[in-house]
Length: 611
Ligand code: F6R
Image (cartoon, rainbow, N blue to C red):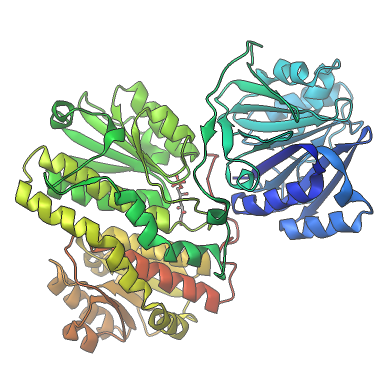
């Protein structure tokens, strides 16, 4: 949530910052702003809404786009204070000599604000972030790094900040506690950002700040310290994503591009991880010996949103394939309900970004309770990946669309590989393992076959897009796929959509059905299909239009449903994947038909870094 970019070097600063903000817009799009230190003053611009509006305002300021030196910028997802120009970052001290951008939440800002106001400080905004600018100003005695370091221990909550001062041109100070900051190392220039995507056009060499780190960054040097002012060394990591991976290319939206990338992103998740000889999976990042794996008695999966839905599919896998009892926790509840973690409990946090606040808290709780923790993340070097200590990466490339698609499918694949590995440690035979390994290798092709049907799915989407309520129903490991299908539809098209276990309809929700309330029924030809057929009949009897997902050539479903999306035949373990992809396309085309902002749905932001 919220994006930060900063640049120090010789180039014109505003175009670099604005381009960076556009690449970060998926982190928040309530307002945007930037501050550039040039000619002994700080020039700034802010606007409510998308970065484009702020860019237009900057272009209208004579000479603004030609300012060179150093600057910081921010795109906001509002927490404290409405989306407005005054609440947009950067925030300034009273004489406009210090500018700050901040991600995170300062929990004690009201106390800090009262103290500063009592001393005569005038605030311009309602944000929690503005206190930081005034506090640094108060502590400033000619050294921005020292002034920033001096105030950090008074801030309760989380922060990733970047600070500039007109008194020290060519310098950006950054600090991190709980909200990521990455430094991009260039030639005669350096950058800072809240994630790597805006750095890709400039450099692949990055340093991830750890909590408690603070750094002074000039064009030539990065001076990295702890808040106690002790120099610290951090590894320089190389990002292997290419710049094009974070661009839309010929696709109308990032979401569509990412949906179509899935054969490749899934292949990346699988590559080198299937052991055909042993009918097993190779997951070196788990870093657990066969003996340790054999001792696991319970699995707890924690995640939020789509990542939690992937976990729910994983629950079926671990119980069915590996015979290990598994529970799935909403990460937001995990630490508050004091979960029972026994010595041989394996906790698997799942997170695309690796920065979701609740999932981070779940990791910390699990580590603290002595669990074996092994994470599934996409973003390399993210907080969850680092704090879990062991885990596997999805290698799905950057996911820019706010609605998760390729990360979800890769998470499911990773859980299937994981279950196969654990299953082979227990009751799953070599021959069963070999069959499943072959099925896993087929997934990219199965997904490709679904993608080839995009035009048919688009037609179905157009036919039903005017409805305001949808149910998605499924059974077995297609039940979580129904939950995920409903989430995708509601978040990008603003249609009210609910996912239910098909058997649950009769326990209440069925009373809502009528001819204006379509039901998407996941009727793939896998065990449980006969039951779903019964549920489809029940919906039709209430005049609800039924859109079925069915196995190619299934005449029974074809005759019964009002519209059918065909998926290729596959085993029950693999079925959630082609099905989820079909539902992603259905949601996408529905949202397009309704004229929605597909990549940046209202009120949302990618990476929920606050509780
Ligand atoms: C929905 C979606 C969200 C995320 C959730 C967790 O399309 O993207 O529900 O899945 O915010 O995010 P990560 O996986 O980054 O922890």
